[in-house]
Length: 322
Image 1 (cartoon, helix red, strand yellow):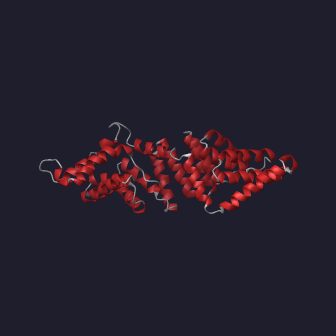
Image 2: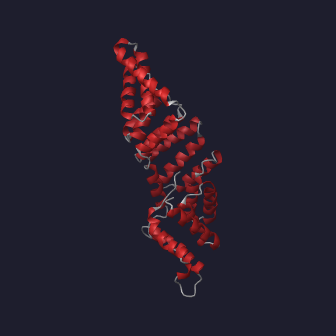
């Protein structure tokens, strides 16, 4: 996860930062500077909340929903560019030129349909990895016209429409066609579930993620996906259950610790929240929001020195845009 910057805290951070820089100027009568600063930390909750009556879990739902829609087509293209580093771009470009030349020399009607479909499919994959999605769609759809059994084209078309084109209805159409031919693909159910999740169809999304569990190829990810669907639904008890199972299976996915910390913090379990946030920042040392949330927990408890240490770190990260 990239650094989570809670924009609504900017004003609060600026005022706290001034206190950190000019300790001698802190107001508060006979109060010690540290006590005055801790009072400010304790009051951060009021500055962050839109309304004192709002659901305490709203912040989690809003933050996760924002992240769900954050990825842009450009970011997806950049991720494909990273994937291409494992390939030889020169070879890929030569393959594209050769395949296009073959199609120019031997039009589809002069070639066996299955062979022509394979050429179009190969070109579709090449254009997909090059981020040329319109060309990829054209070639993959042509492959299916020539050979309806070229089912992998459905999968790639589903991925393109979900992550690059942002057309979840079309993504669902293609992915469901793929699954009708191959119901054992954990990746297809994963992508289909995400498409439903972005359409706010939580029940169907969870059905897809539970299918991933049945298949058993990536159970840790399946538990994470189920937990995220339940976060959006607002069922934080189930979300916690699946997040904890995910940690047991895939401890390297430390983002889960952030969400566990968030949920326990809002549920009134400060000790558990602190435990998860502490473990999270061991692996993610440039996440300002995590330091801030943990400092608030300690400020409201009995660790004022640790609260100040964390707050100072959060302010420095915010100054650097982290």
